[in-house]
Length: 263
Image (tube, rainbow, N blue to C red; front, side, top):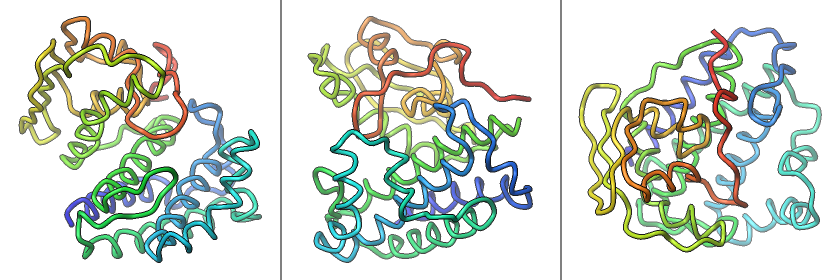
């Protein structure tokens, strides 16, 4: 499954930028909710491990994730879910553990039927959707680390997977907020890092420009006002003002000027 290889590319890009950094750097806060590098690495590591357990079936996944889900239901933060499992693991040791688990995930998914159902938090997902969601997570959370380090990531065309996730969650963006879907999805025309075009046909308004910037908006790593995307029509403007391609409670996109590369 190509998406498993695309996920691994994102893992390696983040692993490379962290490789060799002093352990103290992992305590640095990012522009994403003040999460530190350790917070982000622990979050990625925990959910990658959860996905591996999900491959063993619904009972195995429930045994692993059940206590965390109970804490979440009681109002604990999402970061608190990983703390008992991560323990004292931090810095380069946490990075190494995450990288190994992520590689195990990629290897496991590479040979799966893309349509196989995987148990998860809430409804089950197809294997393709599950690994694409993991690619989006490492790409989006990794952006905060790249930004904090003043590094501009060199994206590949695998970012198209994240754009696709953004497109197919058009209705979810509104329903998750208890809002009526405003109408048909806008037309989306993007340019991938290689210069190739990507197009998702729509009916009401349009969005065009950089695939990386579109992915940044739907994954909430940039405000649409901090991009050069061309957004035309009220449906498109409404979508880009609320876009959220990931599951969970509604999250407000970053305000203009709050997420940027510290060059």
